[in-house]
Length: 603
Figure 1: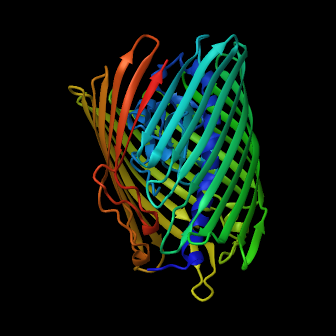
Figure 2: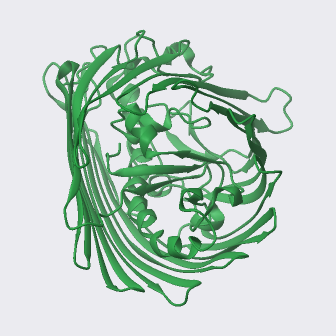
């Protein structure tokens, strides 16, 4: 089926970019904040808990995982390295409850995924937050670091280098990376250069300052389409800087204040393959500045947080259609918020009430309460339950970004949700870690794209109420003769609530499985599979999806030499081992089987 160049391609590219734009903003900015916020809290919490029990919780503070009431998944640095992952999305697709329909750098250390509304601490976050903890600065005068390189089919290359150390009162962590590929399918070439740095200055035992900065320069092709005679070369540059001051006021009270700036520029040129004629150009620039102040009080009974956030963002958007018209918009948004929460620990019970008030000049104000609780049922089982109200403000492009065939909706309201979840986590028989979660999200004013059949003009509207009900289950065995098994399953049903008995119901579910061998000395091997059912029914003939097979990856790592100060490893990854198809639209088919190999040196 041949599709009109603009009608068939323009809107999907436009909308996928807008999601990418704001998602990338979060990925680039929040790691800097998340990595900075843990150091002084760690000192206070070491008086009561072991360090390996602590995680960065949705309350924006460190606390033991046994007191985290929210639906939370943790991905460790060792797990990320075992996957030989190049991007954050490669990691997330193996987490139950995270549905990936198609990035990030190697400088993240581990990630905590909160898969439910987190508005009582983070503001606009209807579906949860991804909290990335970056790698630590060094603690010795002699630098330590890592260098890695990999090469695969279609000249796919990935180079990474990092260095950390400490000189006097100054600690540092530096990262540089480059990715390059001719494109594994449809000439979707990809290039990215990345820089990241973190400098920590300890002025006093109770006062320190951290500066983090990052730069990302990406160039890629959205893909060649012979049916449409089009391709879409794209550039995407982003940078951020964050400065954070920490001070311990007493043994139990600490303050943190930070300022940040984020900049991003995105350009997409949709051109004809045959002649190079420009059909459409999207040019967007985002600038955002802000800051926060946070007080944390920790003792044997309380883990309390009081904070204030403020930010101002501007989006300069131009959509140009040669011969048809140019559309420009320059919306901005100013936001501020106050939030407070406390985790009260009484014996085996921990209760966490939270409250946040948000206000912005686009959609007004919103109050987000939450209440969670955990209970230790013996030494090996934790029960969890929580209820939270959340919201998601419309992207600026939905309310003020006109384009050809698209009209903004300035009256678009935020999505709101009441979320309920309960679950348990247990070590069964000293051999099996298991976790199960049941949830229900009652969403009001859900945003959907609507197209007028007569004018073919699209805009976003609030569609009323929906109910999202589901569950997550994951299990992992303790290694037995160096072998371990990890499996996960998640299920989500979305139903539009109205008086009509024929309401459409969408069901999504996924399976994850991984078998790992690790002799803890030199060799590790992992076979992992992922399958997601997307339930694409509307316009299925047009989109022609294919997602009926599990996608398998094989990862091998072999240590070849090591001393007390140096180690070297070689690794090999076979992606999509059995040539499975996994896509919801036939113009963006996933790559077939491809293989890469590389070397990693650590010192």
